[in-house]
Image 1 (cartoon, rainbow, N blue to C red):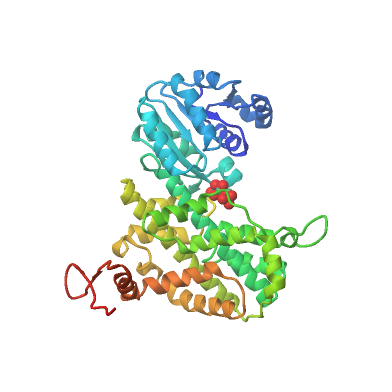
Image 2: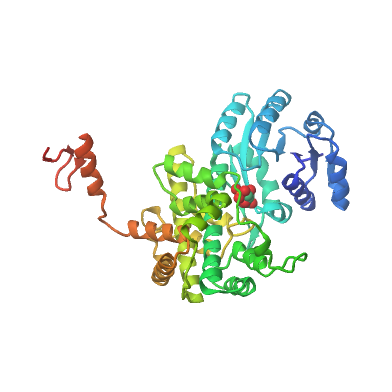
Length: 464
Ligand code: 6PG
């Protein structure tokens, strides 16, 4: 009998179902349009022996033993609520429904509360790694009850990516914890992608490299400390030519990047938590500006788009990127800490870093070091002052200054590099400039300020 039901046979749902079948799990599947089911079973080949196809949601639910596990891979917006409306009356206490899409964790929390009223369980499962990850081993971030984790653990540990034998999946907290961690994962993904794109821009427009030369450099970096999946695929992108025109692929792709929303959510939630995610925000902004191609063309005519040559050594750029990647993760994990406290999730930062070491889009050589740094207990639980990254910063920050300064002087846009440096320079000052802000607020609004030498709120002797 099937151990799990998968509803939604789009790219990701199909890949997950095939992964499960390959790992020896008996799976039942169904889809909103039932025609997709026989086509999927055909595609499954030998694996179809462990997959039962069903025409309707009702038949899928009936095929599952209780307590049931039903994984939905459908849009996490209205369709997920529609699904819940129809399954709630058909399920029994102890059953678990999983949303494996990229959901807004607020929705996940509300849905978990709703199902709890019926003694049902709702899991928000962050799944990273794209189609290939889903098919051959994703990284998965689970939020939900202990009961659901008991049901899911034997299944998810089998289909997860493995990092030196450690499955990249864990129960991170209740209700929306998994979807929140996935959202921040995506925020880091946006920032890492933007930093890589800015480095490409400098190498192409500032240094004068060809796409193939730059791709070869990324390929070389992928053997060192800056190694990561995103660096690897960027090298692949830059060294591929368009079969139709013979031009490098990067030159035939429009420079307007879309976004489905998770990067933006990271920034919004960070700000709501009294935090900031300036490097991620820079990446979100860069994508938004990129979509204004007509305006940029007009502005180039009116204002001039000239960028001067820069002299940036490959090693300097690599060190700068590594420091910026570290600072991006430091920001991401600060958001996770703040959310963990606010929502009572007790997130284990080291474990999150561990389950990101394989399978997910932001997997990189640095993640194992981040996990180790968290295990060692960094000062105030924060990565920024962690001694483990002294070398990265000692070498990387001067490089980041040289790269960012040259880029800015020569007119190259580097919003993410500049944000990384701004974050670092602000956080390494015991005394900054907020006394000015406090004084200004008191002068114009009698908001009061704190003094260094006395408790309580004070007002200044302002004239006028
Ligand atoms: C992953 C990815 C994935 C996401 C895409 C597209 O971890 O596998 O984060 O979940 O959907 O990266 O996201 P954008 O369209 O927002 O760039």
